[in-house]
Structures are given as structure tokens and as C-alpha cells.
Image (cartoon, rainbow, N blue to C red):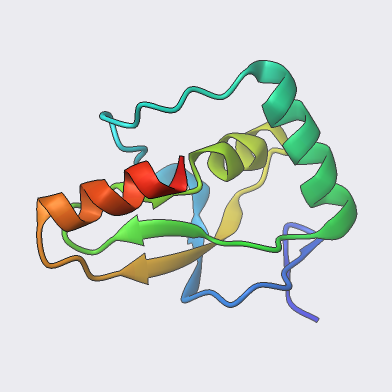
Length: 101
């Protein structure tokens, strides 16, 4: 069983990335309430990582998983599962970011 900081990882991912190296998309329109992040952190701690954070190879920004990043920070995680994706354009990346919210 693979773990990241003692939390089981059940999802497919490309790497266990250093959480400090991940960059939230500054244009992300979705804001997560504190209570939502606290609940997500409890779920991740109890059930493990079931979905990775998606990072664009084109921009380097997080596209999907801003809430999971915040939950990982709340859990004092140093590494979290990351899926790296290739996007053909900024528009394609933006569409995926919006679709996830």
C-alpha cells in the first residue's frame, strides 16, 4: 500500500508531489468555505486519497483539486498525489478548470 504522509493513496497518479511546489490557479473562480475544507480533510484522513490534484504541464497551475490541496495543507501533508495533464491551449485548460467547479 502506497501512503503519503501516512495517508493511503487509492487513486491513480503520476507522482507524489511536494505540496509546497503546487501553484493554485489565480483565476480559479471557486472559493471553498473553511467548513468544506475541514470536512474534506477529515474524509481524506479517514478514507485516503481517492482523487489526485490535476496540474497542467502547460501553465504549471492546478486545474482540478484546489480543495484537495487546501485539505492537504490542513492535514500538514508534505506530499499529495498529482496527475499531470497536457492541455493544447489556455482555453482547453480553462474549460477543464471551469468544468471541475
